[in-house]
Amino acid sequence: MSLFRRRPGAPGDARSVPASSGSAPAVPHAHDARVVVYSREGCHLCETAEAEVERVCAEQGSDWARVDVDTDPELVRLFHAMVPVVFVDGRQHDFFRVTPARLVAALERPAP
Image 1 (cartoon, helix red, strand yellow):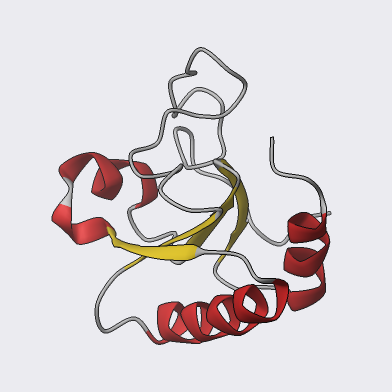
Image 2 (tube, rainbow, N blue to C red; image 1 turned 30 degrees about the vertical axis):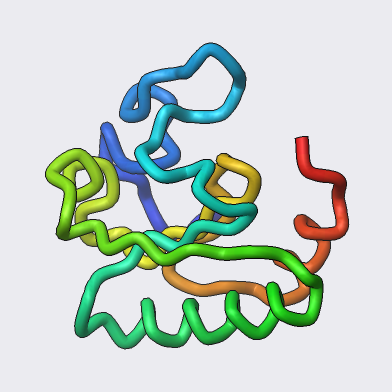
């Protein structure tokens, strides 16, 4: 049983993110790098997640990008208070906290 309940229309809810021509959601910037961290300034969870992503990506030789959700109204609508949100290969991978072993496993799979 999950401790978190998704609000209707929350990120990760198929109804909230329009589908693109592929199976990945149509989220702005999702394909800017192998790993994309959606975060905001002044968020301690975001800072921790970014540091973990930076460390893991450096070890794995993968690129990553940070996107400030507050710079884009669509990202604010999609992610609201769910930051940080981590995408790998254009698909949502984690939110709130980064699990290093899970991120390593995702990066060891070939990019689509």
